[in-house]
Image: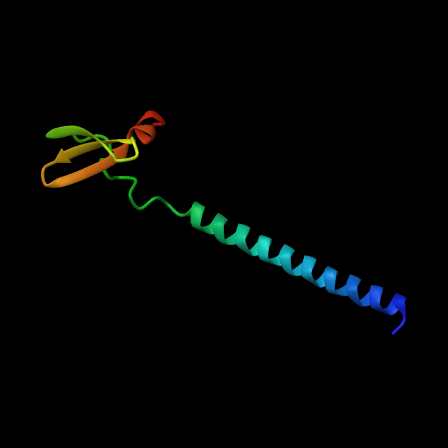
Length: 86
């Protein structure tokens, strides 16, 4: 096969790969847009509004402090980093 033929085939394959990647990205953006446009099913939950019966800070083996809040029989764990970003 001549050199121009090989270059043409390689260019065609590269074009097909690029087109496939573009279709994949467009499909992903469409799917994520549909998921994000749905109403939040947990919007009416009282997250962060309940007073904790007991609160404790526990430091993990690697030094990360975790805040434990007990509300009734439920235990909520959160890192201090997460609480600071709210």
